[in-house]
Amino acid sequence: MIRSLVFDKDGVILDLVGTWFPVMQALADYTLTLQPDPAASGLTRVALLDAVGVDDASGHIDPLGVCAAGSFRDIRAIWQALLPADMTPLAENEAYQIEMRRLARELVHGNAVPKGDVATPLNRLTSAGFRIALLTNDSEESARHGLEQLGILQLFDPVIGADSGHGGKPDPHGLLHCVAAHGATPQEVLMIGDTNADFGAARAAGVADFICIADSPDERPHPDVPVANVIPRLSDLPDLLVRRGDMKQG
Image (cartoon, rainbow, N blue to C red; front, side, top):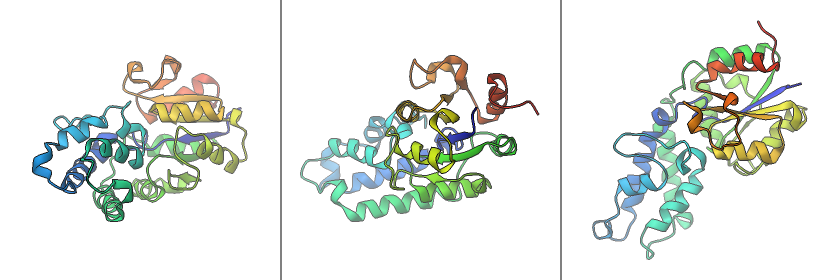
């Protein structure tokens, strides 16, 4: 019996492009200014964004790319490899990390874009008796602000970010923490996500199944995700759980 549902945030509850594309452009622009000689390096915002799966011209974010699946630490590491070797490493630049957090807060807080109607299905799921949690590779603070803006923060317990002390996905520790917080076993839990990091965490934690949010089965993060488990929007989740026998009709 499924008792607990653990959700990823971006691409599942929040619209990834609508919420994060402006942030990624601003972060890339700021990163370029830190080079000893920006004009001489030839490195561009287009190149930085492309390296993490973001198309600067269209705004498309590759659901299988690092921007969608990874943390800011992962993005920073990829950008570091492209930057001049004689500059201060980004990971050692405290001012850079402070500015990164400031830009994310300024551009996301108050501007979170939901991926369709998320409040209705989430309220339906909690009314049916499911415990729900959030597990994201974003920071916990950012996650809480986004959920609060959409009026759904109170539905989630716990809310776990990559900085909450359990590591980031695909490591399973954050997911296992959610399982324990709900007093469940992994076999009583579903992970709902959209990236290989989400699927990897679900597989490593040994949860009952993985439900994928993707526009088409071709965009599911791994061939081992059954096509029947792919839905385009969170609003389709309650009906899927009814079809699976995990939830009663009503």
